[in-house]
Structures are given as structure tokens and as C-alpha cells.
Length: 208
Image (cartoon, rainbow, N blue to C red; front, side):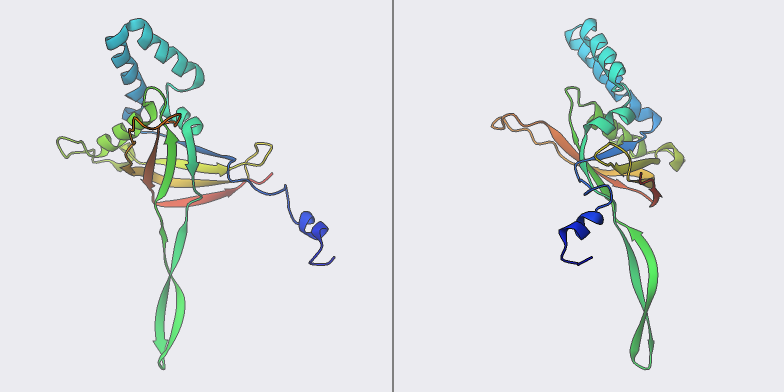
């Protein structure tokens, strides 16, 4: 079949073309971080009455929002497949370089999320960072297992099936970016970005 044939091109599009807007981010927050939505409900209850606080908890529980680990899969609006670099080492022989693979490094991973009306997800990331190193006292836990968790990003087919799953092992947030407040902004949802460091990633090939 000719290389210039559109039919040949179509025949090589297995499952069609992948789409960058079909993906799922999933992750686990440390235990102490999951209290942020309940905290938001408590504040709302103190300001506006117990019924409001109870309503926030009830709705959050109904859709999985009472747990930020469930909420992130809905509110994460953008991310990237993580990158890695295999560095190049060199040895020299008779004045000529011989190149060979060196150590692998993994770039930080970033996600962009919507703020809901309680800032619940942002508060969970803030609580996660505070768990590692408190704002006031500069202390944190000795055990890294208390704050390092695993996260995944999964590109999906148009039918919603996973194409592959990238699992970042030993994640923890390094930066929670600012959320811009602007009275001139109209009809723009509130968002924030998080930069996450991790040890390495594994690839699960689950193409269907």
C-alpha cells in the first residue's frame, strides 16, 4: 500500500487518534490532609449555622467530595505525562568521546485544578505541605511514609477505557501556586496549580 495513501494512514490509527482532553488523575492524600473539607464545613457551620455545614458534608459525601483523594479525579483539569531523561556520560579514547547511558532523572510533575466553593482540594494540598513542614515551627514527621503517596495519570480512549497508566511513586507537593483574585475577572472559574516531586514512575500498559 502506498505511503501516500490516506487509507494506509487510517489503517495505522489503532483505536483512532488519542485525545489529550481525555485523561484521569488519581492520587492519595496523607491521612491528616483529608480533614480539610470537614474543616471547611465546620467553619461554614460556625458562620452560617449548622444546617449549612451539614449540607456541605452531605453533598460532599454523596459525590465522594468528602475525601480529597476522590475529589481530585473530578477537579484536576490539566496535567502532563511525566518526563524522564537518561543522561549521557562520556569516556575518551585517543581523543575521541565514547558516549554511554548515565543516570536517569525524573522531572517534577504538575497538575492544574479547579477550586470548588469550599477550596477543599487546595486546603488538602496546603494541609499536606504543612504535615511535612509546619508553617510556624519548622518541624515535620521522621517517617517519610507518613507524607509520601502514589499518584497516577491515565490517558483514556474515546470509550473511556485506559490506554496506559503512569504511576508516580513517592509523591509529595513542592509548590502550591497562587490563586489570582481579580474583581475585573468575569465568568472565570478559580484555579490553582500544584508541582509534585516523586521518586520515579512506572508504566502499566493497559491498552484495550
